[in-house]
Figure 1 (cartoon, rainbow, N blue to C red):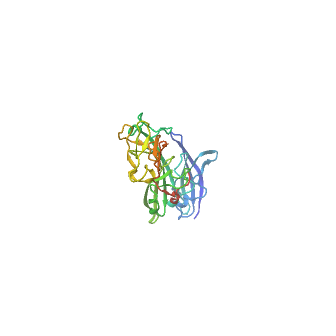
Figure 2: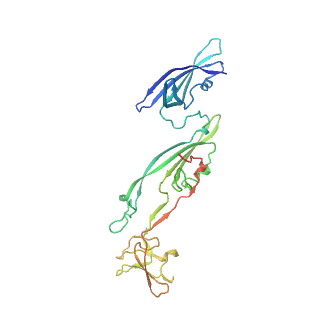
Figure 3: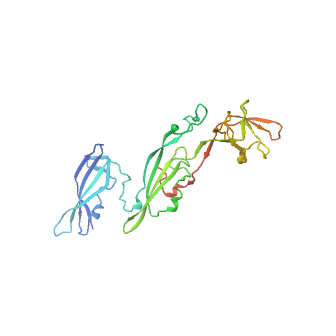
Length: 335
């Protein structure tokens, strides 16, 4: 078995598209010396341009054009009464980028580089604060709700496709709708969520199986945790003093004192009524008291009262999603 470049390049063509990308065609003649040699032997002939090589023939040099995997091998001529065969080999060079690196021929699908792509998903979110962090409220100090305070947001997404020998269904199934447990892709923990996984079983060779897995990640540059306004219809048992404007805490029957937010007892809370004694919603300070109010509390000894101030409007921190180590999926650690 012997194959060698007999002649070439003896033909070079160039086309340029409307975007300015260039595509070259180059032809070499390969000579084989055995009747048993075929196109596969010719394809691997030493001296032919390799995948990824730059366009550089004589004085013709294009540093932005590289050799594509495309190749066409055809039998050209043969010598009568001889084992010598001649083959025409056409290869393509171009400046248009490809979807993955092209420095070698990939025959085993498990050696295919992972494909990484991304996009943005638009959705709407009800806002409770403006850009400066101030609550969005009406002039009567009520939270504004509904479509009028829903604004567009965009969430980056990352898709990773990979070929693997083992599906590992149990591993990634538990990771769906969980967050990264450590810094990944330059983002701190709890900012990347595995939102969906799709897979299929494929065949190659003589009935050998492998799996194609596709992971879809959502990214929130702030965090997937939520901080919601401490707001409701109930408040620590009390009432407004119309003369002083204070929130006066009322003693709880059978408890022996004023209500305690840490007691976790429903009888310590009542339906909130505003200063006109009408049912209303109330913004709280994180301790069950109306935010930014003066509070009058009876002392436990029964000898007097204590006047304090409630805190500013509070927010409730919610961490819904659990965490996972996404590196167990074999995904790239950086892009």
